[in-house]
Image 1 (tube, one colour):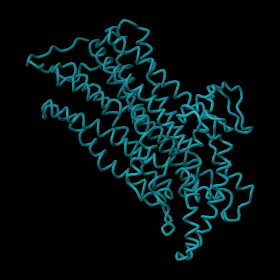
Image 2 (tube, one colour; image 1 turned 180 degrees about the vertical axis):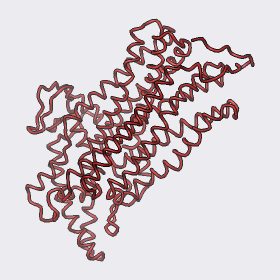
Image 3 (spheres, one colour; image 1 turned 180 degrees about the horizontal axis):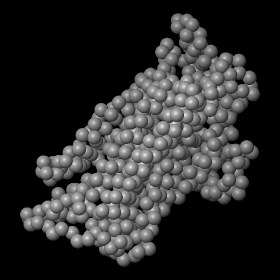
Length: 523
């Protein structure tokens, strides 16, 4: 039986490194397109202020990009360090999109980011603009392939279990790429990154206006951020709905836990706007229940039933029993691969073997599992409800706040009144951390809500961990936390130093479209 302390610490290690890494990724995604937009305006108008805007925000992008690369590389090594059995079991599928990400996206991004910084005097305006757009596309392609891999963990399609190799093997790569969960995750995640980039530009620009510095620079930056942010914030909510619908199709337990829906309700199900979930008693206290809303959002119909947690536990119990039949047939096939009867039984039940493996937490010889153990294993399919319930509502609440915030910003920018309302500038500045709060909450929902599965319905998390000793996990956990914390401090220090210095030092006055030198900006 697995050492659950080692498993939980391995989970904590990966969770912390993933959360740290995801501090950098959204800002990279958001800033990449914004600097491309700013440079496009520079190429079209020839006005040097847009060049300085591109350089300033591009420099902040570069700092963040470097930190994202450093933390992301370490994460990939963990698949072989802490999760070796996971890598063996699904490396045939999971490794393919990550390899493509490295070959196609990461190298594209890393190559052209050098040209972005060092090519201003070596490339024409149009050539440099193409480079900037390729950096932005590379960043988003990188996110695409990573989220394709992660989406497969949420909804494992296009693969089968091979009893001879004891591995999952790919059968349809196009199904992996066009996995509806992966596609929904991609558009939702990158839109959240765009909101983060827009809020970052809004907050820093508001800081300059509050200080009475770089007013023209700040107002132009805020105008771009307001329009880009409003489109992104609207997209996040719309695409988040699509992601939720995909979850209702393929991860019913996760959705039921998010909504703290213990019992199956008549269609369309109601929505718990507020509740205090009690997992021990499987009830909600002080629930504010809104009829019909959840069913309409989650199923997009009036008559499709959304199963509750307790019904899903019963289904899991049935899948465990079916999985035991498949597991028994697997053992016979390993002894005699020509056993036709065993092969037939295996083919009928192999998709449920993952559920049977949940019993490995309680006994090694799962074929002799007791009824009590089967029931316990079925209840293990329920993640902790309260963290998911409140994380989801925090994320959604912030999503609607961003729509309202950027709508006001867009209105003020269109009326050229951004610098007239200090209360709004202060609100913009203090709203800086909120996109990261929403994003980390969303990542928690996606990953924590999948438990106890590392690959949904296929491989339990506790079986995927490497057989490391407790002290080895503690040493690496401490080391990663220290290194990542130092990197985060360095990034904040570098960005703060550059922001306080301001954009005026980054470039010499460049000629405008008519060849007339622009005066250096004041302040």
